[in-house]
Structure formats: C-alpha cells, structure tokens
Image 1 (cartoon, chains in turn cyan, yellow):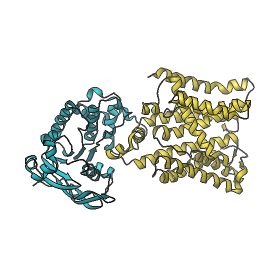
Image 2 (image 1 turned 120 degrees about the vertical axis):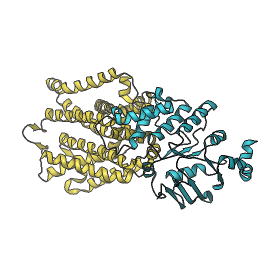
Image 3 (image 1 turned 45 degrees about the horizontal axis):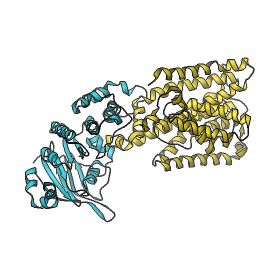
Image 4 (image 1 turned 90 degrees about the vertical axis):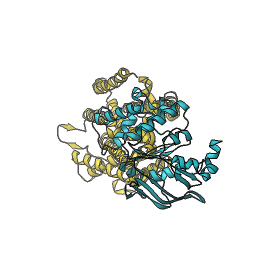
Length: 250
Length: 319
C-alpha cells in the first residue's frame, strides 16, 4: 500500500456531551478520491474542519505527508498544501471572478507586504488565475462580479480558488450542495478530470456522484467510522445498508 | 461606472483647494485659509480611518488617539525647547505607529462590537492620561509657543505656507493610498473585509496584515495630529475625546466609505456645516444631525457617491 498522504489516528472531538468525532482513524493515499458519507449529523463537516485546522481535536493526531500537523493553524496547513472548499459557498462576493482566483494565487506567492505594484496588473497572479478559470469553465465570466454568478458557477469558482492554491490535498465539503442535476453533472465531470492530479477528501450527499468518483468510501454514523472500503465493498456492506444506504436505495 | 465624473469631482475639488488661499486673502477673509487647512488636516485623519474602515472593515472608534499623540508629540517637544520640525514630526510618526502597534496587537484579537469597544477604551485611556499630565497643562491643555521649525524656507507659522504644506501632504497621501489599495497588500485587506474566514482558509495569516494596516492607518492619523498642532499651536486632551473619534468616523461615512476621496469631501462637508450652523445658532447640532442622517440614508455610498453617481466599496459590498 502506498504511503499515506493524510492519516488521522484516534481523532476525538466533542461539543459538551455530544461526541462528534469518535476515535476516527482514516488513511488517505496519494491520488485517490476518498469519499466520506453518512447521515446528517454524522460529523462529516466537523471532521473536515479538524483536517483543515479550523477546529482542534480533543485528542488523537493528524499526519500529513509524514508530519504531525495536529497543532498547526489553518493558514500553516494551507501553506503545506491542504485546501478546502466550503459547504456554503465562500467567495469574495464584491470582487470580480478573476480577482477571487488571483487572491488564491496570491496566497501562495510569497508574502503580501507589497504595497506599490498593482496586483490587478500582475501577470504572475493573473495568468495562473486565468488558466484555472479556463479549467473550470469560467473563462468567459472572469470580469463578472462574483456575487452575480449562478449557484453552479459559484461552486465552480469555489473549486477554482481551491485549485489555484495548487493543493496536494483537496477537502471538498458538499461541492454539489444545492445544485440542479445539470450543474451537478458538470461538477462530477470537473472532479473526474482533476482526479489523479490532486488527492481529494470528498464529503457529499449525492450518492450517484460519490459512487461515480470515489476510489474508497468511508461511512460515518454518530461520529464513528462504521465501514471503509471500495465502492463495491461499501455497497455490499450489510451494516452500511442498514444505517444509511438502505434509506437512500429505497 | 462614471470614471469621468469621478475625475471631474476630484479635479474640481483639488483645483479649488489650490487657488482658495489666494481668493480668501484677496477677499480679506484669512479666516477661510485656516478653516480650509483644518478641513484638509481632518481629511487626512478621515482618509487614514477609511483605509481600515472602508477597505478593511475594521471599525476603529478610537482614531482621535493618534491625532492626539501626533499633536502632543509636537507640543511636548516644543515645551522642552525642541522645535526642530523633522525631529518633531519623526517623533509624532514613530509614537503614533508604536501606539497603533500596541493597541492593534490587543484589539485585533477581537472583532465586531468588541473591537469597537476596545479601540474606544484605549483612546479614552490616552485621553485621561493627557488630562493627568499636569506638567503639560493637564485638562487646560498646552500652548505651543512656536510652530515646528523647518528652516527659513518653510515657515509653518505663515498660514498660507502651512496651508500648502498640508495640501501637499494630502495630495501625496491620496496618491500613495490609491496605489496601495490596488497592491497585493491592498487587495488582501479588502479580502479580509469581504470574507476573512476564506482568507485564512486560502492560507493568508490575516492577523499580521490587519495589524500592518492598522499601524499604517494610525501613523497617518498621527501625522495629521502633528499638522493640527501647528495649526492651532495648542493641544489639549479634548483632541482625543471619544466624540472626536466619532466625528472622524462621521466624516468617512458622510463622504463615502472605501473611496479615499470621499473622506476628504466628508471632512469638508462636516466642518463647513459645523462652521455655518454654529454661526447661526447655538443649537447647530440639532440641524447638523438630521442632515447627516439624510445623506447617509439617501446615499449609502456617501456624498462622494452622490456626486459621482457611482457606488463605493461599501455600496458594492451591500449590493
């Protein structure tokens, strides 16, 4: 088995008496799309927040590319190459689409104590940003205000911003949330294209998308992992069917 | 977008400022030179606040503190017989930068209402500190016997000279800040205002940049304070009273947040109205108040937005 890119060991987190992450041990290998599914309240978003560094686990550890990152702040993890997209679209609404992506490029182009040269005319920021926009199909919308984009376009912009940071690991929190079938199909196509270029942890409710994309699937219920394996193995797992897929398949 | 109208408004305003002293002196009304100097000094203070308020979304309710530090730097050095202008201004700038660094380091760990209250609290602390300094006049304030000495060429004691020095400083700051807001640093600060959580997730260590912006803003305001001391040849705790912080904020909002030139117009509008109305009645604040409310209500991008018909950073953020 390949060296793990991301590994958690016995990760635990509770809010008051509510255990939201219960001894989660997860291994994500380079190049794979690792989906995390489970019913609402299973602690998927919390887990993503812990991986991104937004929440600190109570105990356990997180390792990225061999280094212990459990105590690293979000910005430091982002600098290491862990990027996340948000369940609720999180963009710079009043910026142009291109500005949004250029900002993501800027985040990984050294320090920003640069006070004089116009960043809006800086090819080192704009060119990579335009390339990424072309990749996600937003090249035409580069000069539009981000707030004016359709929902599906905003989600694509969100992905573009994450890609622009040239991440080694993408944490995707429900990228298809609220999308119509057409937009969702577009997103699946986009993620399939990105597969192998970047490792992904994908939290998603859209089971068609998950089974189409994932190399491995981890099922969480009440903060605990109840199963983890290939899509076929998960489909055949009796406990998973009872806890979760049963209702979706019915 | 009406870039042409915007340039027109700025151009006409600056041209008027350039020729105003000649007209005022020819008309035998030197008072207006002093009033306009005062307006431009507050324009600098309001501009400094707009940098972090309009672009960074940091509602500092204690900006009068830096005005006071700048003024007292000139006043206290003059009191001890040190009248060298370069030295006084260097001390004013360094002292306000240091104060902004300390105040910012503490208050930027909070946000929202807490940030407003902490910046206000720090400014009030400095206010009471100035009041307790009996050697420097305490409550009564400190007379400055002579203006900052910049040699024979630049006599700040001459109203017209001081006027043009202040105008030059304002122009340079307008040009520098315009460059700044489109730089990497400037865009970053606007990104923090727009969505700080996203900035952190992208990998920006936002705190250090916010602190840098806060220090820069306080420093510019300190420079305004040093100029103000030269205008009034007097400094007292009143300069840092919290109502003064409120006035500076009012100028920014009135003129148009996040527009750089808006605060200049805001300072002019506020101080001109104050002068006109206080000459007419002692209850001038009862008239000024509603006028301010109306401008803010009917033009969310302030007076500058009204003139140019364009929406400023704040208008865009809401739209």
